[in-house]
Image (cartoon, rainbow, N blue to C red):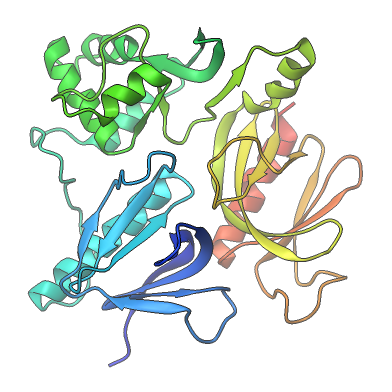
Length: 352
């Protein structure tokens, strides 16, 4: 019987022999994982079976890479993958874990809700807690903090995390709050920023998160960025990063000059309305470029005028900015294209 395809999409994968990371198209079936150099390739670059495999998520083998998970096969071969944002990692790891469980139990793959591996009381759901923490009205407030001659944007301190957990009755006291906060940190929902919090996160102490005002943290899928003391002009430039993240993920983008297509990680922000794009294989620092969306037009298209037929096909859309710049993008699926178009359209009308 043909394997059932469970999930497919772009992920960043570490090469087996070299310490380099590349974007690949990944197809998860009910009995294994295949990965392709391009989505349009007819044969995979590699594959591995899931029977007897072990999933590790979050994987903290690489201090400079976030949102990594690891699949170790029955033959003890490690495969490392990196998602573009937290929700994407959770979707992939949940399906991979379920596929492994079904294979090992001789069952047919079906999705069901599973608890995370961290040892917490049964009534605690870290994913729900994380959503509540990020609520713009009642959640933990992000700030701009100065420390070690650097400016940390859209972040908060360890003490602020504990204050919020106790004040909202998610923890009865600060000791219980530390257990919850450490769980959020270990699962990758919170990330350390600055030397103090990073040292604590990699130490062997029971509480990886510090209840201190000089320990800085940020939400894994926030607009966090760090900078040194800068000129007023630099500060104005950074204003475009201060909007709330509306959507993020990987898309194929056509280059302006060479017209070649490359996978980029996109982050869509509102107020101000910007899309920033990054090389998904590298640590997220300065973006490769940005698109100011205020007053832009976004539409689905069936072809790109100056693209070769074999380059791309299907799920294409075009952004025309207010200064008449044309940007062509390709989503993985028709549904994903629809979601991006709707989100960009909304932001272009409401964001400044």
